[in-house]
Image (cartoon, rainbow, N blue to C red; front, top):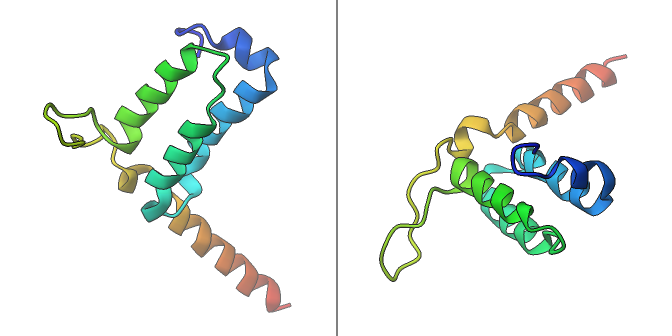
Length: 106
């Protein structure tokens, strides 16, 4: 955040802060829905701050889908860290089930 000049905006602009906090929250979206959720977030991105494009592009290439390949078709290379390596939706779901089952035993 500091390297691309977003520190002050993040600290003072609620809209920017909310958007940035939503990016890591994609880890709790079902893996099959991450791409769609990211695209919705991208559409919701505040347009008042230019540096958010840089952050969003970095996040997309690193965690969602890789860089766009040359050619007319919209094909992308693999992400540096594919969704399967960082998504925790199933882990949270199992934890909630265990907690609920354990809680109902009392």
